[in-house]
Length: 143
Image (cartoon, rainbow, N blue to C red; front, side, top):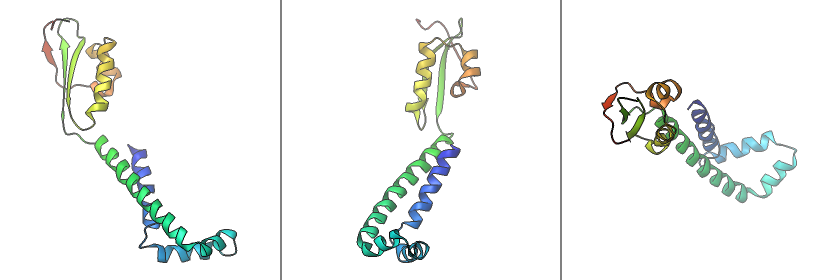
């Protein structure tokens, strides 16, 4: 989650620098910093291509920044419900109901726990997702 915030922050800074409305300020600054180099000569001869490329870079960096910031926020999202169904006699995990953001990714952990026959104490100690606070006791549900 921390690295997703860092990545999204870097993309937002890049999008602020390459924003088409900021280019009249940032492009001359770049030319001053690159003065006397072949890069400065190329930029001055191809200003139209530079503006077009910077606009595309702005749109791409803004899109990635928003996407990665959304993933970082969803990782901290505590909305939703996770209900685990256990066999009372063997304490094995029989099923899981997940209604939450990113449920598609979370259900894979539960599927693997069910497939490999994890018991509730093992799942609670070894799998952070399945650290349940309340336990729903069931009988032998045909399994």
